[in-house]
Every structure is written in C-alpha cells, then in structure tokens.
Length: 65
Image 1 (cartoon, rainbow, N blue to C red):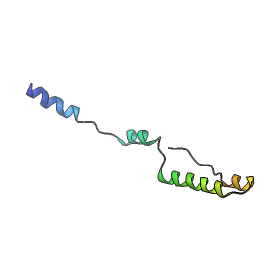
Image 2: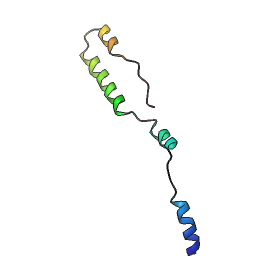
Image 3: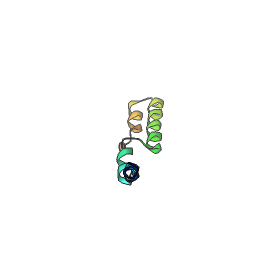
Image 4: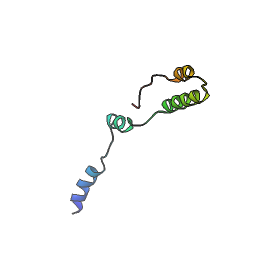
C-alpha cells in the first residue's frame, strides 16, 4: 500500500499549467489598459454635449483577448 501511494502521489501532484492553458484561462478577462480605455470612453461620453462629440468618443478597440 505504501509503495502504491509513493507511485501515485507524484502523478497526482503534477497539475502544472502551461503557457497555452494560462492564455486560454485569462482570455476572458480585460487587461488594465482595456479597463482604463473603457473608463476614459465613459467619461468622454458623459462630458459630451452634442451627438458629434459623443461620436468622437467611440474608439475601435479589440475585445478581451
């Protein structure tokens, strides 16, 4: 029983995460720069007085990576 545990334990503890898995895990979250850009766009729209000024606030951004 003890030998089986010594063989099985390292196999159970090898839960390494690779760079590719980490990228897939983090792909649904915004970066700090994305959050800052979204907040700047919101502030710009709140300060706008005309429809033209609101249109100038809209910037094409990529979504979460």
